[in-house]
Image 1 (cartoon, rainbow, N blue to C red):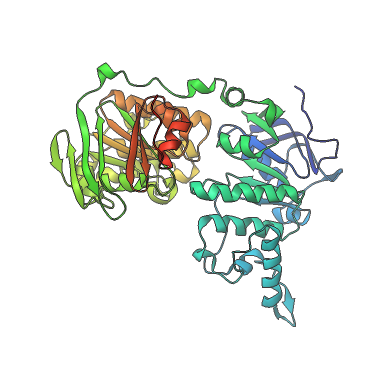
Image 2: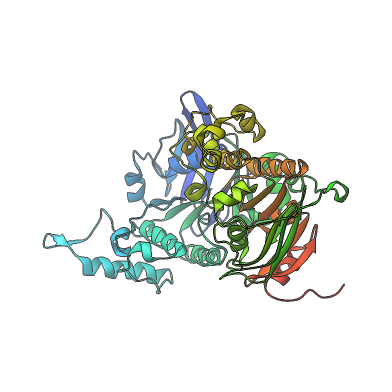
Length: 503
């Protein structure tokens, strides 16, 4: 394999033949990685490929068992993240490490506060923070604002500024858009561009292929702890990248769509649905069908899901299940009517992370039907096998599972109530390409068993690849319907409030 450099300039970081084992299991073997000043270098692979371990070795969290790390042409060995940080390497984690009740400035300089006459020099701390923010073009964030008052995108900025305050020359970003809304991702794009202009080397870890192609100059792929390729981004297609990651082409990521002849009766029907955020919602989902719900952030996609599932109920219009009128006024009543809701926030709303796989899988069943019925007649082992869960067993705490397996537990939790209608909001957010296919197969399998599925996704290739029809939202209303396999352009035309031109 030929590894192509970005420039003739010496790399900021050179990692050679890196190896790492945990408890006798090899997680990295003979891995090379170069990071150049002013480069965004994407690191991709399935969960378990070794991305996080390699990133943590760079950041001083782990020491390699084999290989060398060079910084500025000199061999270095970091015994802690603090040593790596002092050498100019910082990491921005997927889950923010901020104190919400402290100000922006206090978070940026936490543990490193400037001191004057024995006391924290707040004036200098705030001035230095303002200078750092200004250097990134972020003049709209006040150093005196409490972090909890900031939108998520601005909290991400604070994390980056916190890293830069240590004079970082190398910045590792782990799934930086996982917590961001669609419109906030564009802010991050601009921020990454400004980091490049300042000559900072950015190691960018993401499962979102569009971001990888939009932002990076080179892509390194890991699989099962080994280096597959390091290639300039412009020399790769999405299909080639997926083949490197999982060994199969992009088009094979989605199961076959439903056969019209095998679709059943209408299971879910909404007519004239409205509330404070929605107006005139009308939709049908048949047994065996997956209907996609598209739209820009804030268009009302999640509001439709929450209304159908009784979280923020419709105050106007009617809802019918299998031809009978129902009024889901709460999540509990929706569940009892046979409606299940997989929310977009897996960790915040979907799981009790410190509880076991068993307790999570039975959580909704017990809550909706009582403990006795919640335990009765359910084959838990069969349920977990049906979602192809990989774990140490039903007693394992969910927080120790991969993102893909956590999502399977969420799905198992809802399958335990044997729903007729399943509403899924961002079902594959934050999980890798291989795990996504497992979720897709599970959803299509449920549809074949007669479940009606309404699916929301911000990833248009996913929505198009999975949906038998696509409904598009715009400003709280349905802007139109598209048949299976629409183009992204057709979806975005409706999502932005424009009409499709006649063929």
